[in-house]
Picture (cartoon, rainbow, N blue to C red):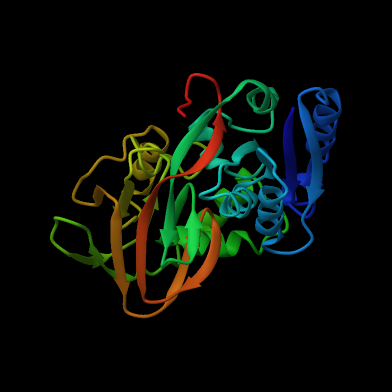
Length: 301
């Protein structure tokens, strides 16, 4: 029998709108008592999911399941890094980037099937300024500003998200950045988007780093210098068709460590969670530091 803990955020927009996911999770636990010694616990305040995950590690749990979006995933996984405990996913957020990369796009039957029949994988994680962890994508620029505005919304979903993107894009001013990466010349430029990815996508099948993998000991940087009226639709098409290849407007790099300097402190996001950061943003990979349950056929030990 596997000792497990399921963690969810009752104030998550998705969980409020679709309480059936939590009820389905309760039924799953009740139907599999021969397999799991499990409890379903809810968060009560920001960063509580990390505390609950650490408590689960201390209590001897072998599996901790994040029931939520990228923010809940980030908090739960942050409490499991460098432990022997496996992270499970029931993705039910707006984007579900890491879940989609792993082949678990949402809270459907495949998510629950993976909890029963999946295979543990050891994956890399990212660390920003030795303080903030990310497991999918971090960034600064337009995507960070979208994250900040998105978190202030009460009504979410893809149509709302698209309206927010268009409205922000029309008024957005690109910051100046200097990018330093190993074995390469420093790049001084303005950045519309500057993302550093562990997986290949933001979520909703928007592929910011086509070809990225979770266990190569490297992070994938994508710089989009500008998005204007003549190129924004082709850029959007390339984003969803996995064709965001290097060009005069797009720089891509793969490395274990990046340093990004800005003129002043500012906004970043880690897995869609906006936060303030110093002017220097130091980003490094932490190789094979998280165990995660993936659909069978994707796993390694």
